[in-house]
Length: 151
Image (cartoon, rainbow, N blue to C red; front, side, top):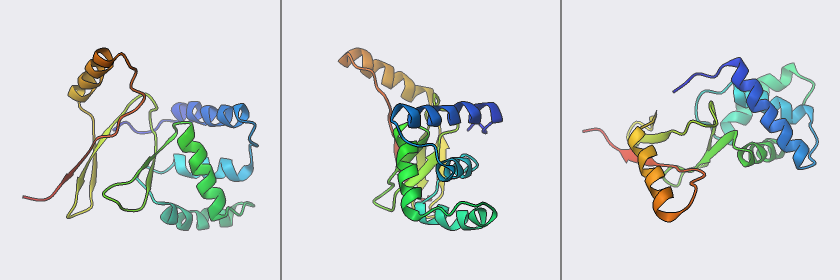
């Protein structure tokens, strides 16, 4: 997986700001704080763990971010494609900051260790292209998750 770079983060932040503007939503310090915190997160996260992690961060700022604001801001980030929302094997929703909006990846989850392995495979991209041609559509997104256990 590619690591985030500062230029990419600014591009992604501008997508978020434009989405807020286009949908006549206010740019608030709380929303920006959630974006900044999430953009520094490299792992999948649940809302509860993110909220707990943000408590220390919130103590350093003048913002008090409620759980509702966190959920609402995550929904906005999902709407504009900056954050992906997953539900693996019926568990609580997990979120992931998109490091590169144009670069899709998939998941392999070890059900014993709970480890999530992200991967890319050109063969999946080929299947997507073939499906688009065959059915005359444009695939906007796809989510492939394999569940595995140790041998």
